[in-house]
Image (cartoon, rainbow, N blue to C red; front, side, top):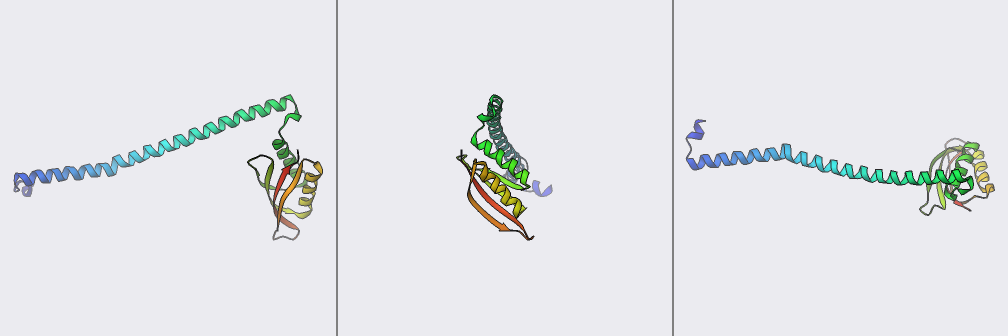
Length: 161
């Protein structure tokens, strides 16, 4: 502390001001900035959660409408949902594993990825879909699997109703 008292008054003030500046910078870097960043991240998460909640609320309304229309009669189903039902039931009946199913933006076609399946089961499934008169094959890509008699496929079906 002797070195500080041996300085002139102007030097002592300059050293104290410099020390305060360094302390304020450290306080900013260690405390204030991380808190500010955490608050901004939390606000972003809240906005994303609110958006997700709004989407879910909209879907709940659509689901209620669909359930109400099903209660009024099975013929009130949309072609989109009936095509989904047809694909699900025919795939499970023929043993075809559906990896993913994605509707087009217009809702009149569905892209389906089929996992590894026996060729005969796959052909039976496609025939059942065509014979139903509700779906037509718009696109078909098949890839042979490692095992003999097995394949993987991508199919796009168009609703015929």
